[in-house]
Image 1 (cartoon, protein in one colour):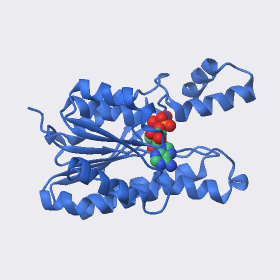
Image 2 (spheres, rainbow, N blue to C red; image 1 turned 45 degrees about the vertical axis):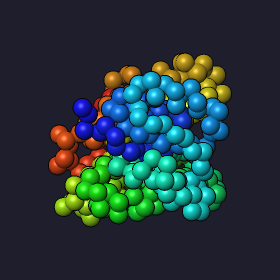
Image 3 (cartoon, helix red, strand yellow; image 1 turned 120 degrees about the horizontal axis):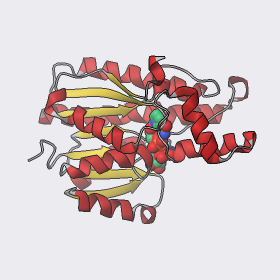
Image 4 (tube, helix red, strand yellow; image 1 turned 90 degrees about the horizontal axis):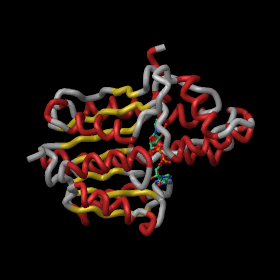
Length: 262
Ligand code: NAD
C-alpha cells in the first residue's frame, strides 16, 4: 500500500497544466484530492473522472479566485470540511504578466504577487497547525527557474518566485523538528496554457508560427531542447512526498533541462 493512501491533498491550480500533472500522479497513490482553479466545474469533470479512474479515493473541485481577500484561507477550510485535514499542500496556482518595469502597472504587479506568493503564504499558515497535530505533512511550492534566475519583462513573476523560495526555506526551518517538510520545485519551460499564451504573443510579433516559436523558446534557455512535462513534475512531487525524502526540506529542486546550469 502506498504511504500516501488515504492522505488528503489540496493542489491549487490543478484544473490544467502542471497542477493537473501533479494531481494525476497523486491519484495513482490513492489520495483524496481537492482540485482547484478558476474555471467552472463543468470544464474539469473529465479530469476529475480521469483521477478517479487512476485510483484517487475521492476527487472534488472548487472554483476559487485566490487573489481575493480571505479566499485562500476559505479554500483550505472548505477542503478540510470536504475531505479531512490537509496532509499534502501543493501551492501551484500561478499567473504570468509580461511587460518592462517602466510599463508594469500596479494592478498587474499586485495580482501576480497575490496569486503566486501571498496565497501560498496564507494557505501554509492555515494548514500547518493540523499537520503538526497529526504528525505528518508535505508542503510543496511550485516555484520556477525564475525563482533562481531572472528574465527581462517578468519583474513581478521573478520577484514572486524568488520570494516563494525564501518562504519555502523559512517554513522548512520553522518545521525542521516536526515530521513535516517544505520544498520548492523549480521547473524550466513546461508547455502549458501559461506558456502557450506567451508563444502566441511571440508569434504575433515575429511572424513565425507558434510551433516555430516553441522551438525558439527552448533553444534560448533550455539546453535539453525539450519541454519539461507536467507528469515529470508529478513524479518529483511523488519523490518529495515519499519516506525517502523525510530529511529533504528547504530545498529548491530544479527540473529545467539544464537552463540554470549555464
Ligand atoms: P496553467 O495556466 O496551465 O495553470 C494555472 C492554474 O492556476 C490553473 O488551474 C488556473 O485555474 C489557476 N489560476 C490562475 N489564476 C488563478 C486565480 N486567480 N485563483 C486561483 N487559481 C488561479 O499554468 P502552469 O504552467 O501549469 O503553471 C502552474 C504553476 O507552475 C505556476 O505557479 C507557474 O508559475 C509554474 N511554472 C510554470 C512553468 C511553465 O513553463 N509552464 C515553469 C515554471 C513554473
